[in-house]
Image (tube, rainbow, N blue to C red; front, side, top):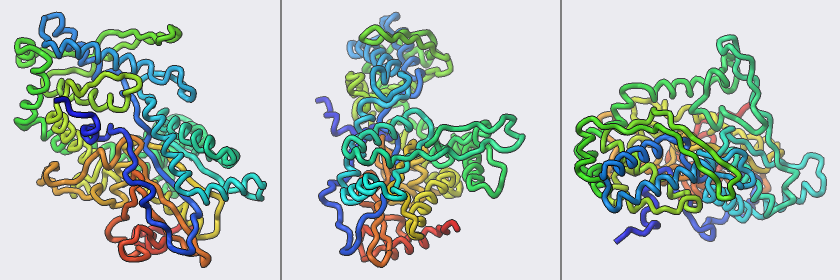
Length: 512
């Protein structure tokens, strides 16, 4: 019997479509005398397509060879058209959608757009008093109306997530429109002669140092001034990028592929699709690459795109083929409006569970808590983002109420490290190098730590004496801060934390 898609959701790992993790009706009410004064979030972009034509094209080339050699099973014959349909959907993704500037690979899907529109609507519904007051102040023309600050990484899918989120805000609360603000990007970068280029301006609203810190580059982001607030995150980013190229990390990440289970699962997946004679060619050195050109035309005939493979993605083993098929299965979960083919037909649930565990294994070491010996190199570049949350609340504590909300839009590569930097439950404990990550002993799951549209939100409340308290929502579930901060809870077991105690717990020092 085919497994219902709903039961498979967690098997998509970080490609899991978003769902809020708690019914808002069950949220704990703030203590008497406290009113909402501010909210802030950081959110991963919504569901998207494949970032480029490579794995899909390589698999399609493999399928074409099998078709030409009569190497397909009845089920296998259906795979090729479904891969091609997925490639077409990615090549044209976003065409005809208002707000998507350039159609193609990497764009948000309809599911991704909906995820952020709904996230915005729930934010408004959760804090109606705050936004009603802010909107009214704007209408009345206060001397300094409060702002809703919006920033993003500068990458299309993060920028577009910000756009669809704020569009939804304004549809539900039009009076907020004049209060939206996109601050100038940090500048001037790159600094110094070493970059070899003059400073490169970024559009308003972009902050790569906070929201794309895993990939800061000398050509665009070099920081040479040790007094610059972004000197530390730039250095941490370079350390991380060196780390992910090390042989030791890849030995850890590649460990599952060296175990017998890898071969067993690959055979179980591929023998349902390809004949034994065709699969035997892998053992004889056959390979399949993303070569050739593919042309796709929109239904209205107004857009035609021709894409050519680079030839750099090569399938040389059954394990590689099955892994790439899993990646198509996972991405298709968030593209059901554009590519309704059911890829679960090609990925039995026991194999999907295995490949999800392998993907989580890789992400745990590359993006997550990693090993104790790595000393936080996989997340220290996210400390600037963590500090930005504290700095916003520090401003409130000093009486600076210019910001009513701060809305940030980023990527899994920042959400996952931020969870580690905050010490969040199930997302932050590294392992000794000699203890391998496994589902049996480790609760870290990409589907929970950073599904598509993953988010962290801080709601801030103040009482008449000026005391500030904070509640953390992680994927819209009331979530404790790191265990060491339990003493900052306003009462035992409360989801509300005294801000002064929370700040002291994290060792945050307010800016002068």
